[in-house]
Image (tube, rainbow, N blue to C red; front, side):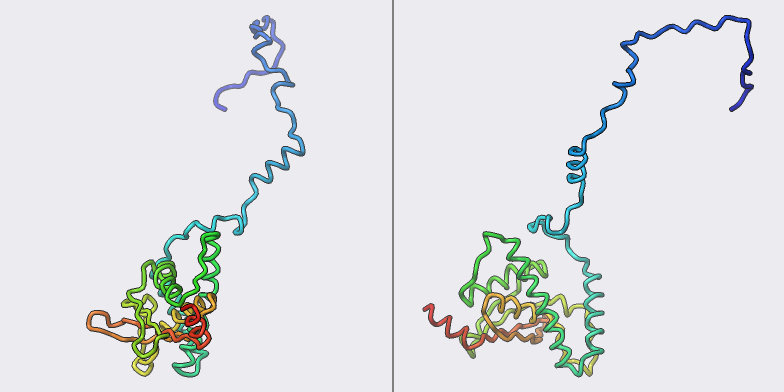
Amino acid sequence: MAGHSTPIVPSSKQPAVIPRTPSSTIPSSRSAFSPAPSLASISSASTSISTKSIYDKNLNRRAPEVSLSSFSFLFSEIIQNLQKKANGIQDLEKRLNELGYHIGQRLLELTTLRDGKLAKRETKVLGVLQFIHSIIWRQIFGKQADGLEKSRDSDFEYMLIDNTPLVSQFISVPKEMSQLNCAAFVAGIIEAILDGYQFTANVTAHTVETDEFPLRTVFLVKFEPEVVTRELSYK
């Protein structure tokens, strides 16, 4: 500190009189400190500040949208990784389909848990296809599918249409692999949703380009014979 300190020496002067403060304004040693918390209060406090696990979070709370560039980069890396293991285009599409199937199973489970008691069990072919066309497509891509049509060749073949499939927008396919359709990944998701509702089907992705939509993709859904028999029994 700046300046000279006062030496501690005997002084002939009388010390200054310090006015006394009333005792009511000075807290006593007992009132200055709160009593020690009990074990019960410590236990309740620790419980209230403990972090919640993922099981305690609200399932109805929607997650924020994923960055499109992040998704494109991740999906591109997935394709390159699967391509190293695949033996040809058909094998690569099969691997994409299987990956999509696993994701579709978890998506259906999450959707059912979020709906809770309001979850509806679809029992008709058209009902479950409309569910995929609207609810599932919106959850994955933020919009409904662009079309749902019935095949002219068979009463139990349907087509889900996406004019601008997200999984194909940022994929550059070489000429020697021009037959590759990365939307096989989405076909696997559709197939898993149908299987979860006991509508066994084979789903394949086909590029049917137009002048306006060069990436237009048709997902052909072919239901198994037992599904056809069950559907006819409802009539």
